Image 1 (tube, rainbow, N blue to C red):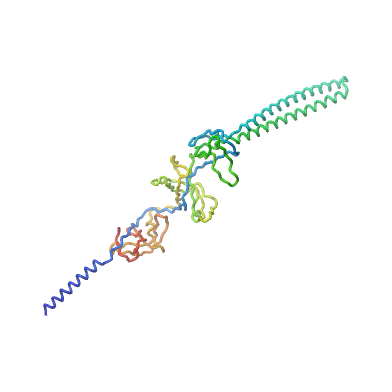
Image 2 (cartoon, helix red, strand yellow; image 1 turned 90 degrees about the horizontal axis):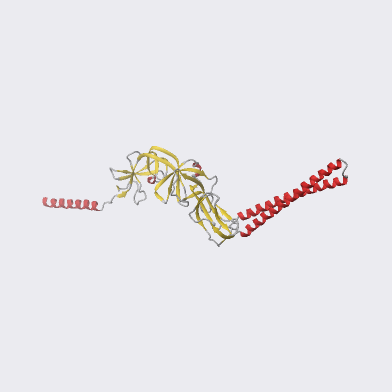
Length: 378
C-alpha cells in the first residue's frame, strides 16, 4: 500500500512539473513598446504652414518689350549682374530712329522759321513806331500810320504762331523718342539676369491679353529674399507681423534659421479643392548668401512659450486625453487620464495626471498595446 501511494505521489509530481513546464513554454510573450520619460522642460505653441512655402525675391521682374519686333542686340548674358537703368535688350528700330531724325530736323526748320518771323515782326514794330512819331509831327498820313501798325500786329502774330509750331515740332521729337525708347528693354532695378528667352535675330511679341508667355528676360534681385507660405485659416488669427519664427529648408536639412514674420495677408485665399489659407511672409533674421529664389521652405510661427513645465511627446496622447503609463513593477500598462496645456506636434504640456519619473508609451499604434497588456520596454 505505501508503495502504491509513493507511485501516485510521483505521478502527481510529474504531472505538476509537466504542467508548469507547459505553462512556461506556452506563456504569452511581453509586447515590446517604446517608452518616453515624463520630463520638465520647455513647451512651445507653434503654427506651421499647411503646404510647402517658397523662397522669393523681394524684387523679381519677368521683362518683355512692350512692342513686338526682331532682337537686334542682347547686351547681357544669363548670370550677369546689372544696374538699374542698364540696357538689356534692343529691338530693330532703324525706322523709328529715322522718324526721330526727321522730327529733329523738322524742329530745326521750325525754329529757323520762327526766328525769321520774329525778326520780321521786330522790324515791322520799329517801322510802325517811326511812322507814329512822324504822324505826331504831321509828316505822315493817318492811312500810312494805320497800315504800319496793322503790319506790325500781323507779323507779331506770325512770330507767335511760328513759336507755337516749334513747340509742336518738339512734341513730335518727344513722341519719336518715346517710340524709339519702347524698343529698348532696361533693368528696372539692380539684380541678376536669371534667364533669357531669345537670341539675336529672333522675333519677340508681347503677351496677348490673358495669355502668359515666357518673358524675354527674367531679372532677380537676390539681395532681398523672403519666404511665403500658406497658413490654415483656422490658425491665421493668432499670427501677427513681428512674431518670431523657425524656418527650415529642404536644401539645408540639418540647419534651422531664425526668422521673423513680416506680413500676414489681409485676405483668405480660396482655391478650388484646397483648404482655405492665408499667406504669410517671413524673413530670415541673419541674411544668407547661399539662398536661392525657388527653394522650398517651411515656417513655424512661435505663438507662446512656457518654461519648466511637465511635458511628454505629443504622439503618446490617445483620444480622450489619455495615455498608457508603464508599471515597471508589474510590467503592465495602465491607462491614465491627463489634462493638457500648451501643445505642438512634438511636445505637449501636462497640467495634471503625470509627474516626473513616469514613463509613457509612444508606440501606441502597435497591435496589443492597451491597458493591462504585458509589455517589455525596447
